[in-house]
Amino acid sequence: MIIWIVGASSGIGAALAKEYASTGYTVYASARSEEKLQALAAESTTLSGDIHALPCDITDNDSVLAAVTQIESNAPIDKAVLSAGFYDPIGLDDIHLEHFTSTYDVNLHGVVRCLLALLPGMRQSNNGQIAIVSSVSGYTGLPRAAAYGSSKAALINLAESLQPECKAVGVDIRLISPGFVKSPLTDKNSFKMPFIIEPEDAARRIVRGLDGNGFEVHFPKRFTLWLKVLRLLPYALYLRLTAKL
Image 1 (cartoon, one colour):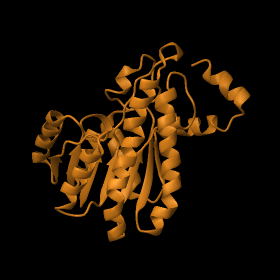
Image 2 (image 1 turned 30 degrees about the horizontal axis):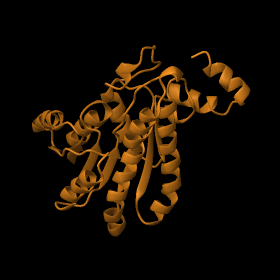
Image 3 (image 1 turned 60 degrees about the vertical axis):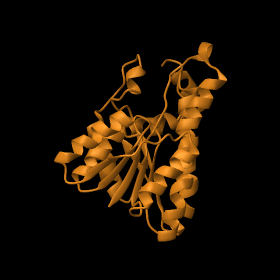
Image 4 (image 1 turned 120 degrees about the horizontal axis):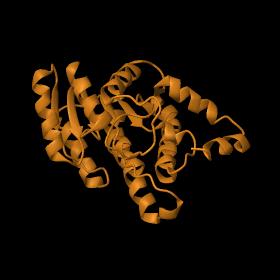
């Protein structure tokens, strides 16, 4: 089985690469840092599967197409997990257009580039699974996350929109919505993060979820279910609560 993991240089992506390799998958691990990917690939010598370093910049369409073409020249891609992300928390006083542009180019446009590269091969074979990693910050608007949260909300909408049509042609679109996971991105937060988990724990939860039948994999549920309820509140109450954060 062949899996392509984007955003594999650290955090959830790196942990997922090792988790899938430990179950016998051939893993193609992509990110911009070749050095980190090579170090990750070296760890697979003790695992039942292999990890191949495949540097790729998802802000560059040619780079994405080249990566997918290279994998498919060996074998069809059975699964893809699109987990690359950009996060820089800023408040109202520091907000600027470039911040939104940089965030969207990775979090949203990068995913779209990967989808457009993956879908032709999967549609031709009537087989394949693509997991889009969003975030619970996409459920509702939260302070200091206007760009990041809105990019992740767009991914939720994107996955929901594509799922029915893709299912009709044999492509399984899934949505992954993690809470706080220890990573270089969450290390930027200066506040206490409730129910934060290690990336290895997140990877195991994702693998179990993608092996199941549900559209969305979200965790930890003691946190994500609370946020799902929060977004159902009337705005008058919801905005009073988020103003306290």
